[in-house]
Image (cartoon, rainbow over all chains, first blue to last red):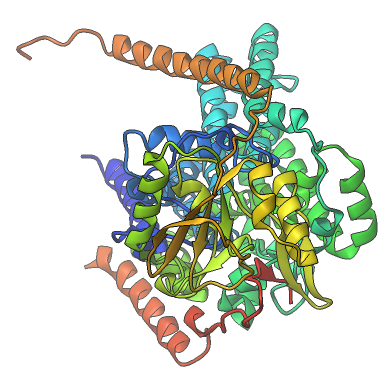
Amino acid sequence: MTATRVTRALAYAWVALLSLLVIGPALLPGFVLSYDLVFTPQQVLLPGSIGVGSGLPRAVPQDAVVALVETVVPGMLVEKLVLLAIPLLAGTGMLRLLRGTAAGVVGATLAIANPFVAQRLVIGHWGLLLAYALLPWALVLAQRLRAHGDPWDGLRLLLVVAAGSLTPSGSLLLALVAVPPALLPRSRYAVRSRVLLTAAVLATWLPWLLPALLHPGGAGSDPDGTRVFALRPDVPGGALISALTGGGIWNAEVSLPSRGTPLTWVFGAFVLALGIAGVPSLLRLLGRGITAWWAGVATLGLLASLASVALPGPWAALLDGVPGGGLARDAQKLLAPWVLLLAASAGMGGGRLIGHVRERTTRVAALCALAVMPLACQPDLLWGAGGRLVAVDYPSDWSAARALVAGSPRPGDVVSFPWTAFRRFDWNDQRTVLDPAPRWLTRTTIVSDDLVIDTSAGLVSVAGDDPRAQAIGRALARGEEVAPLLPGLGVGWALVAKGTPGPVPDLQGWELLLDGPDLSLYAAPQGSVAEERSDARLVAAVDLVVGAALLAGLGMLLIRRVRARGPRPLVP
Amino acid sequence: MSVWIGPIIAAVVGAVVAAGASFGIVSSQTAVPPTVDKPYVVYGATQ
């Protein structure tokens, strides 16, 4: 093995080690349950999974893909693979994008170990992070496509974009940052192929776009959300420093303590200096077209996220006035292109700095110091965000409730109480987590979709969009009896989680089928069946066509790869 | 010997800062107080 290969292998080994260090305890047996991060042993494909439930499609097609994958792979393993894939893909993608070992190692480290990744991991937005992690890979392909115009690279780019399009925001991130550079003037990609690629990328949006357009209540979201999900200054120095350093998530509870220390300033300034130093090298490496586009989108995202806090009125008016504007209300998400651009540019700057050192030993020492520095300044990015991503076991009541619901011919959907969107269980160390019931049970489960946020003005409730959930919430708020209302909403079952706060209505007259230490399950005296949405088949058909086309594309690439290797002699 | 000097320096730097962290330069995440009890489980806090 040549020295260069050894060096490259060491760079990939560093990314693997760093990924293990970042995810850490989440890889132990059990499920990591943190805010929106909820996996169960086997999620079932339900109408809501493809966006034709009664709420707006948010984790679509993420829920459908997870349900399909979990028909063959246990949910616990799927969660660990997803969590590990995020730093691995981001790091290896950066190594491929930046090519040089020193630049790649520094860029990969910064792409993995930063507040954006840590905060989004804790809040459980793994679909967005998967898109973030695939973005360097998509840019590698966009660059090749622009330089050589090979149609197979166009197909590869489409598949990478599709793989990261499990949520609307992930979909938009990849499509807006990585695809246009391959299409802009001076690309060697044939014009006809550019049109086809654009159409194909837009088709990958259909699984979430179509149900959003068909949603009976429209695709609008509560304007309060724009205000409470704005960028939140999380370092001394305010919103600008928070945004430049990749932090600033709206939720103070998922911000890591290292954000409050002077080290954040020092390290942030150092990375920015490296980033500025690396701009010329990045321009030379990626070319003006890609770098300028990426920088443009990143700057726009940075300015937009700052506008959410500096100009809250106009920002809210803009998002509320634009169809689909709700997708941008969680303003820190808009920093994703900036965080990766800074990592790439600082990587090139680091490579340049190390390149000035002539003596080999000092060069190795400097590279190791640059690679360790982000971890040393922000040690709580490691080991599952400082021990917050910990795997736990679900109590056995959950399996029992699922079996009862799955095995019963009684009709009707399930409603989950207490009537709050989130849970805090003792067995999950009181960590806040989205109600796991919809992903556990084999029937559509209605949950409260109002998001209660603790703000300086008191508790603010951001209204959800599921009409059935709204009807139940209204009845509870007015102190009305809820149980008689439920069968009319197509509900035949009620699941009550114990030991977690929130209102539970009187279910007198309902049959108690399970009364365990953690859950109770009730069946309505007379069940009823919720009406299936008339557009469900249309959405399912479109999803099938899009999924089959993508699988066919993947198959074509695999066949081509096998053929390119040619027949191997039996006796070498 | 020369190949190992880099990792050794990196390990020493890391250990020093980690030690500083344990003495409060960077507080542990587990020290963050949980959300105060409310009738509802809040999604998060903006303050």
